[in-house]
Image (cartoon, rainbow, N blue to C red):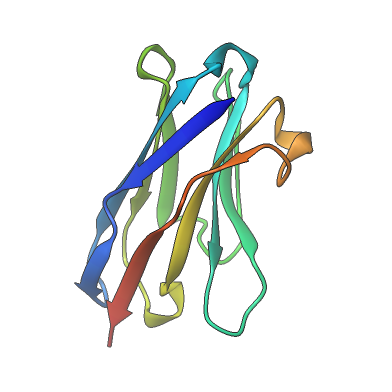
Amino acid sequence: QVQLVESGGGLVQAGGSLRLSCAASGSTFSINAMGWYRQAPGKQRELVAAISSGGSTNYADSVKGRFTISRDNAKNTVYLQLNRLKPEDTAVYYCVAAVSVSALPGGYWGQGTQVIVSS
């Protein structure tokens, strides 16, 4: 089993920034890919960004150029830097971890952290 604990959400004004963190513990040897999903009220869950153990990344079109995903393999931690935030970025952000990027959204999920962007 893998446990994921997110932190860093909060309330921010449009144009502002936040940094989300997600620390993995447990059987982390099985994890090669980590990422972030989000779900806004009344909307479907969507993949925001993912990163492989080798550092390859992919992003949703809506966040390209604004969000940056990174990871510290030694700390089993993944980060999501959110810049130039927009009200439409408001959602619960979930950390995910899986054996590969292609396995997402399967795998392990964190409890979520709320991001609210005010206009």
